[in-house]
Image (cartoon, rainbow, N blue to C red; front, side):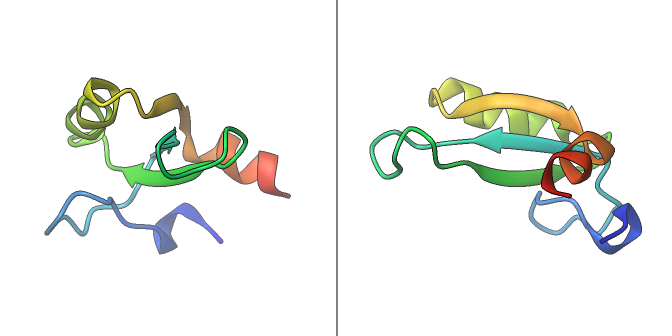
Length: 71
């Protein structure tokens, strides 16, 4: 899956995702479970702050690094 196929997770945004925000909600997920939101450059900080304020954000990586981990 190339980056052009992945859009930002921010509601209403159709921009290409260039960041992967890896998160986990400890009240719902086992410690090893990871969820991913994708973000364009404009919305990376907004989405990361949303997750971080709740204690969910684990890491933010460029999409290419996430794709390398999943290969």
